[in-house]
Image (cartoon, rainbow, N blue to C red; front, side, top):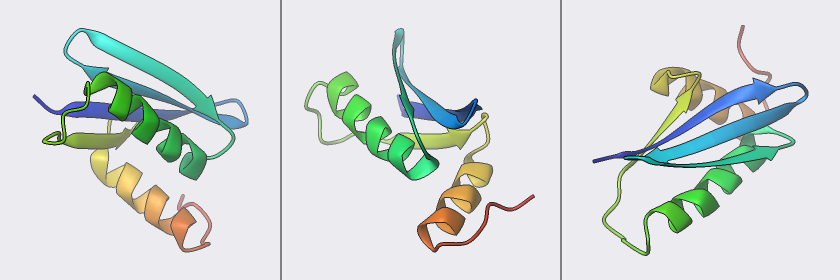
Length: 81
C-alpha cells in the first residue's frame, strides 16, 4: 500500500497530510517546498523505518498538479494558473 502526502493551501501556508492505512500525520509549513520537507519527515515516521516505501504526492488530490507546482517552484518559476 502506498503512502499518500496530500498538500493544500492553508491561508498563507501549506498544509500536508501524510496517510498510510488508518494512520494520518499532519503538518503546516510556510511554502510548498517546506511542506515537501515536512512530508518527508512525516513519511519517515509513518513508515516505521521501512525503506521499501512508495509515496504519492498530491496537490488537492491530484498527483500531476503537485508535480507541476513543485517543479515550477524548485526552478524559481511562478505557480501556474
